[in-house]
Amino acid sequence: MADEERRNDIDALLAEHRTFPPPDEFKRDALVADTDLYDEASSDDEGFWARQASELLDWTTEWTTILEWDLPDAKWFVGGELNVSANCLDRHVDAGLGDKVAIHWEGEPGDTRTITYAELHAEVQRFANVLKGLGVAKGDRVNIYLPMIPEAAVAMLACARIGAPHSVVFGGFSSQSLADRIDDAQAKLLVTADGGYRRGDVFALKPAADEAVAKSSTIEHIVVVRRGENDVEMVEGRDHWYHELMAEADAEC
Image (tube, rainbow, N blue to C red; front, side, top):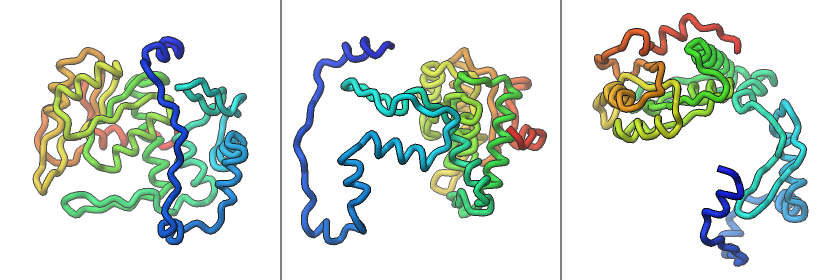
């Protein structure tokens, strides 16, 4: 939908001019050393955010316009291009921080995993190559229907790395809710798991994914993470185990 059409769909816009000063007690307890950043942002908001973007992010193409503001739409850093995956991972590894912890994860049964930036970097690159090997290209959509496990972050960062928009669907949603989101995104690939843990018990996730895919027409491949260790049906040619694909994938992307 064009910007003009979207604005025409809005019946009313609220312009808010009120301010709400914090109580003195709140201000006394606030961990604010000085107000330099606030003052800078107040005096030159666009210049402030341009400096933050330049200093904190790596850009492949610098923006031409800091902000295009046409109520209710705002476009920041117009013309600029960056890779979110590279900013989350590569720049930290390149800075010598590869051994620092990127994710410390605790699962519901009490299992834990500690993943460094270097390890996550390699894992994301492998899965990016897995996606490419299954035909996912820039602009193709991917649905992610997983429990709260590190592979969810890996999948999101891998999608960002190759320019494939992703849609995360909460693992507790029904098969119909997933099917609706697959159709909305016209997704080409689904990442799910055999199952997950809820209140100490394993709940099956793959059957709901199968039902959702049966109701949609765009999914070509399903990548299944082994988590719950529950039995699942795998459709030959369509369904693939995550760990098997990752074992054969190149670690550079």
